[in-house]
Length: 420
Image 1: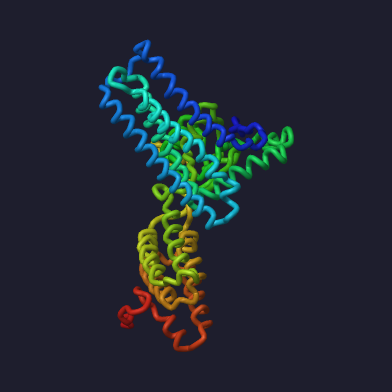
Image 2: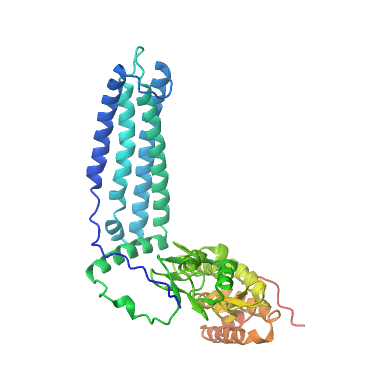
């Protein structure tokens, strides 16, 4: 039986901060030297490049210099806003992660491109147009623009809460690996008889390609159980798949690892529970004391109710994927009805306990679900109804209690319920 092997990463000390300032200065200096030397070299030898007349070359270089200078100001503003956003989450994060220090190389690249264009521009005359120098200026613009877009995309990812957590976690993991090394032979503690395929990198499980895994399992005549669910975070060496009743060749193991697709964060396309999570986050943020917007929470509950109604009669829980012959080849963990209902309602009920709108809307939601779901799923609804009853009784006035116990699909202001 073949066991997926953990890939141990080499333990390296935390990398010292790259001398960003020195590299930025070096880029500017190299740009000045190249902008002075190359046009002089082209006076004695034609080195090729795009064809320009003197006026076109001067206009091109002038536009490059002015455009790059404006772009540099824009990037500086963007980086400053990112640093302010990070500091608003924690004033210590900006210093730890070094956003501005890493951006200095980009500033050096942009400034170097602008200076290079200006130095070359000074050497363009009616009798001499350094074609290769002008062509290189255009190439530097393309490279600098690509680096700018990449940096801005990275900064956009970092300023999200999850991005900051991942960035700090990466630094922390590097430090931990350097400070406390894994004892020799520690990875051999896994039992040899276990047949598991392990992750080769860290990330969140975004998608499990069930048909592909079932095809591999059928070809090897094995049954595979996926251990993490979609949306779960795994680290390198964490078990991904358990293989039973057979063995797998190395090529099949590599294909299985590719079939469990990881990403930096959860994505809604193959993770319906994450969609519910986002709606719940909107609702509980609206119910926070600093915002106090129960109407937005009610609007989120409208969409949550629609999603739960779609799930009300569908088979939930673990999924078994079969091959073309009908044999079970893969078991994928998925949340059942109770887990999804807890995800959708528990935190909203907790944070909205003092909101009449939320309590009335939740009662209407439970009534709607009770008319739709099969009897086997009503126990959890009864539990939530009991929580709502106890929450209403804790209100300071009996009139408030009566108001809170009246279902209302609009929260407050809807028509009286039909008692017939």
